[in-house]
Image (cartoon, rainbow, N blue to C red; front, side, top):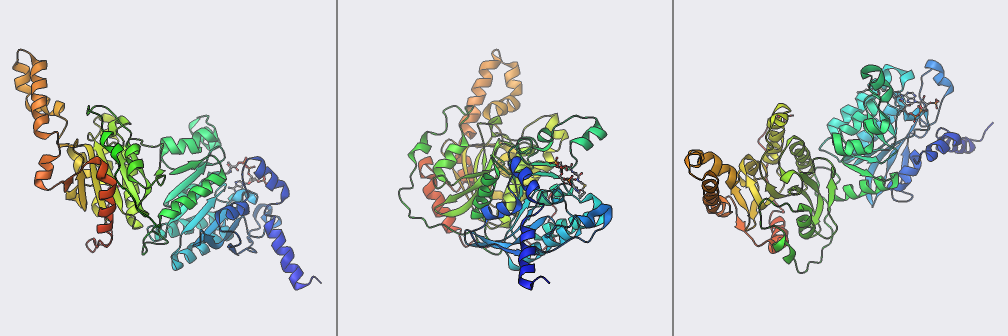
Length: 513
Ligand code: HXC
């Protein structure tokens, strides 16, 4: 009879093989790592403690009883990431395509429950063909058990999802319920139904890449928050993002040591062009204001008129929301509003203070925007800022027009501090449009309409195209020299460090989804 220790060693060895050497080679041949190789990259060396290594499914359908793999296609457990406790599951595509059924789902639920009870982040490394077709409804039940936990854990612990293979069906909805999605270029896909089903139902011919590749989700759908050139780079991004977040909603993000120094940034004085019509790149302002090389952009290639991302300010983790004048003049449209609203809520959930850099000509007009709901989408951003209780500071670099002035973290909706640069224009609208509306009759009846329009435009600009009306009302706390922005912000966030703000008692709010 086999000795007990030999038996255990043999079973462990078997579990480590996943779906077997041949399938591991196929996985590598596709430029993909195995479930265990990914965990090795994610966690500090030697820190991984595996749970449920010997779990097996108990289905006999369609010959599944002959296809038993220890661990049932998912590696689960906990370990340290840069010294911090994290829980992890990593699906093994070499075992029945990483498909999920009863036992596989139970293993994931177990680490999710532990992560919640112990207040630590959950990282999911997804590589799965979705519900295990042979196991039927228990697969669907298993998914729903996970979805339920994702939602219960939302806002309590950070949940991060890497997509590292062809994720179909239920395999995409759990990631969609988490805080951040990461995709690897060329090897990861997300779709509810794959190209074959699409062809049958809609007669569209589309490749996996065009239907749900990293590029598509980074640019068209906005489903993914980050993409990277390969799996190792994806895993590094996960570590970087977690660096800005706390372990759970009761804690603050870790602050890095900061030595201090000369905080003036004279380059900022020349950033805003002379003409209000000329674009500039708001990322240049971010680079000057934030600690060097600390900015990590979220959804970089989606709704580029809005720049969102994490950064550090004197070692402190902050979330930056900025209009981008270099793309569609920084206008607020449906996608930009929804993108920023989501980011604001993520930061607020995890105690990350918010910095808003504002240069916005207003909401984008047009039937496309109106018919597709700019009203409810713009309202999402208004809602997200208004309910955020973290420290919030706004810097108006140039335009703050119309409803967009209100929405972009104005004092009226709870900003703790609003600063403006001298070229700020805080008004109901731009001088040209304003002159056309309020002086329509004078312009129409003038001998020289063009000249009259120009004259009235100049008159309006003189009255309103500056920050001093807002400053006179106290809506702007201080008009500052751009070069002093970083120093002022360091002091502002330090001043707001112990901010206490509580929402009224309620079951939950009703954000216009
Ligand atoms: C059981 C599966 C499987 C699944 C893949 N496999 N998906 N087994 N259930 N869902 C198995 C394959 O049979 C194959 O086994 C092995 O995994 C590798 O799969 P391949 O097809 O050879 O790999 P590839 O060519 O890379 O294609 C990957 C794929 C494709 C795109 C994921 O396998 C696929 O389309 N699978 C089905 C996707 C799907 O429709 N899932 C169900 C969705 S419904 P062998 O032994 O041949 O190597 C769903 C409901 C939940 O998820 C909804 C909740 C809201």
